[in-house]
Image (cartoon, rainbow, N blue to C red; front, side, top):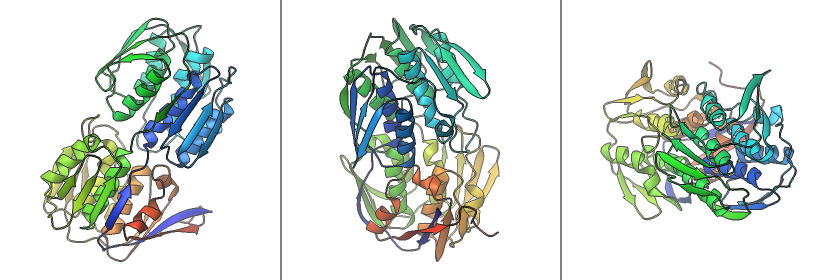
Length: 427
């Protein structure tokens, strides 16, 4: 049975919750365990999510022993690994592509079906493949799968046409076992990449420049096991901060890194919200007036595309007209039609959304088209009068651990209800 989320909104949220570990940091660190030759990688603060389970199953299929309980994960990588990935698992999740670099570095070959994931644009892995080819890999596409081989990868200077997070992570992992020095220019600067680099350095890798646009990696012969803590999830934390904003509530999110949220916090302050920012917490204070703002999504440290749907939901209740330009993914407006069913006034012009604020929203039956679109509908449902029913809840569960329990902890009225897989909104 599938699940739907039922919300009763139009009530201020109040209370304190702790941010989960970052899914987008945990997945590449998990993949990096494949670089070990008979070693063990121990991770803490790992969120219990569908994507984490999928990556765990993928690593097990390749020969690793993965144990996971209450946020603690232990991955034992044997000397012998399988280098062909199972299509059924890879097509569940785009992050499956992160095993390509480690497998190529460790096993000298890899077969990877083109991965799946959210329908928010093509998101090709061309940059991953071009970078690996510059390091000496022979790559060919056959029957919808990537076939890659290299006796040993060699260091190279790689310029990324776009600061792709996935490409940066894949090339970083491949480079730690390559011969010589690899320089990745126009590298992505996200905190999740720094978390991966920290793990690789603790495993014995030689890396400089993580968190900047130029990363230098000097390859080593072998890596050893270590332990690493996953950083807080900045997107999840931001979503609950916005939940406090849209409901006019008093919500505190702890156990987080406010400096990772600077783009969001700056926009919320510009919009007139009242915030209290601590060393490892952010609190939304009631009494502010949400006013229209304009923004464009950009690679980190710019405004994250993964927060564009959520802040759009908030701006639907702001005074005035807001403008959002989506500059990262070409199809990330699938949530617009669903928000409009709840009374939002949004006009699309190419990669730009023009939002005219309204005084209130009304609950409706809607569909989560992808992970962050689903989060936006949750925010709208929390602010709307009456009941909101969100179908295809599975998308939301890919990125938010214990969402219903956290909303209930804040005083929200939320529950998941079983439904038929084909059940959905009746338009």
